Image: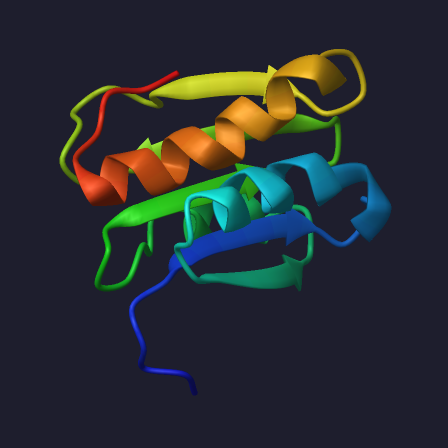
Length: 107
């Protein structure tokens, strides 16, 4: 188990990895490490809230909804986009998850 701080990204095992590359590139641009884990679809809801030391998590559901959450926010999510319908916004989703960690304004 990797104990270094990272953003956790839980993705339905029904989603091809190449569909989420824009999100990953957005995180990488902000130079924050991440852990990508493919889980059964029903586990995404539960797992995305287990956000580790950085307290930021992303969940990608079987229907393509990608949801950014943090323990520090009392609403259901901070940002939500669909990886199949909103490809132009996905890099921002990844970047924003890293910007929360850094304490920077969201894009």
